[in-house]
Amino acid sequence: MSDRDTVDPGRRSLLAGVAAVVASQLAACGGGGGTGAAGQPLSGGTTTGSDLPILRLDPGTVDAAGTRVFALNIGSGTTVFRTGVVAPTLGYNGALLGPALHLRKGERVRVDVRNGLAEPTTVHWHGLDVPAEADGGPHQAIAAGGQWSANFTVVNPASTCWFHPHTHGATGHQVVSGLAGLLIIDDPAVGSAGLPNNWGVDDLALVLQDKRFDASGQIDYTLGASDLQVGYTGDTLLVNGAIAPVFKAPQQWVRLRLLNGCNSRTLTLRLGGNLPLSQVANEAGLLAQPVVRSSVTLVPGERAEVLVNLGAAAVGQDLILYAGYATTGMGMGGGGSQGEVAAMTIRVDRAAQPGAMTAVPSTLPAAAPVTAPGNATVRTIRLDGGTMGNRFTLNGRSFDLARIDMVVPAGATEIWTFTNTTMMAHPMHVHGVRMSLLSRNGAAPRAEERGLRDTFNVDSMETVQVAVQTASTPSASPLMFHCHILEHEDAGMMGQFITA
Ligand code: C2O
Ligand code: CU
Ligand code: CU
Image: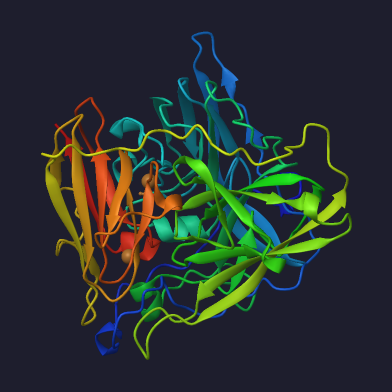
């Protein structure tokens, strides 16, 4: 984290408010476009030569009772994204982004959060299966200057999860301003599973996010009509908060933990030369077998872990990580032209280090998927709205903090059917459950879509069925299910359920 150019941490960030009026062009759009959000071209482009910032792997401290304790201080600061331009940003324990909290399955954890902002926020553990009271959703608001502690036991398998604000109506601007951190979960019972795990050397977490900068170089979160329809898109792609950075790597297998932390863009990631990516994990944990892929597409909120053989490259060689994105999201002559930007450079600068992984494991200790019993309750969540200037909705309704949309028995396994009746794709996410994909339009999920899940795409006009297992302990505290395009979420494409 020492690579951040950070000055004047006391300065408040003032970000533009959100226009509430939607002048939708959706009604004028033609057929479906299966891609995610649309938007302007991205730059990232030629390398700035700056070193990739590495999020600090935070071990926390273990107290006398054996609880692992972390401290997160949310504050404002400034970040130099481009030489000579100082921009106000928000961060956890720093001016931008946050640490990677290192969690271990089976351990008791407490995170003590202090909100140093002049506005309320929350800290949501995206992907963590925690009690609803500890989830950090919109019901766990932390007032300006206030404090909150989350207490939970880690039950998730080894995986890469993340945390971010889930503030009622204000998630989009808080995330774009810099609030996002990582959760690295290890399972002591499986250890490294034969995968690279030398943090920042051959085990690398990449937070991919786009931001829009105004003429003076400040982060711009003014939402126009198109942003409100299809989601906010930035003009610049950042990796761990840096524009087109360089990571210097040893000549060996490395593991990339990829997070799409964009507000709305779906990203398709590939390496120059189309070097194969061995995908070993999706967003919720290890796959049963590695899947060799030429590219990996991630919707907002989704993660994947891939292995890359830098042993096949020469010392001195540069490999470019490219991010493909949709430039048109909907209609207008049949959807989805693609742009591509160089996100970062991986520079092989030295020989393999002792302990390097020598071969990709042929099988991995994946967690068992959730399967639904034959008599499982089936619920339908219809993705709708979005026409004639209206907001996107779920089952025809906009989010209401005071309305419970579903009451689900505690410890139940149900089938939830997500049916997208709209003209664009929506990345759907459910809090506080164990979940697996059952089918897409009736077809079996692809290999990399199996195992546990927490965030998955639902394409335009597509129906996705998932098996959902709720927590065994009932709770009156609501859990969220929503679209992870943050402008859709903020505008109410979200519902809540409790377990009884
Ligand atoms: Cu990543 Cu409900 O959030
Ligand atoms: Cu979440
Ligand atoms: Cu959406």
